[in-house]
Length: 94
Image (tube, rainbow, N blue to C red; front, side):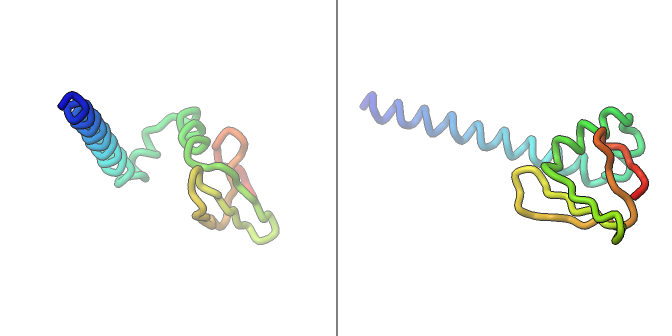
């Protein structure tokens, strides 16, 4: 019986952790839903921190004026035309 109670307690802890992660994900999704508005109020140093947290690697094609951003913990890539991001996450001319 104690074994079952121990298993139940472990499952309950896991469910609680999953629910907390889901709630945090929903909060982040709401905050990023208005990314343009958020970006306007974030200071340049915090913009850099945010970009460093989200972007694992950036590849810049200066001739084609494009940037390929490899997102952290993701195989997805996004191309951004016309600008490149500097080392501190601030926009630099391509």
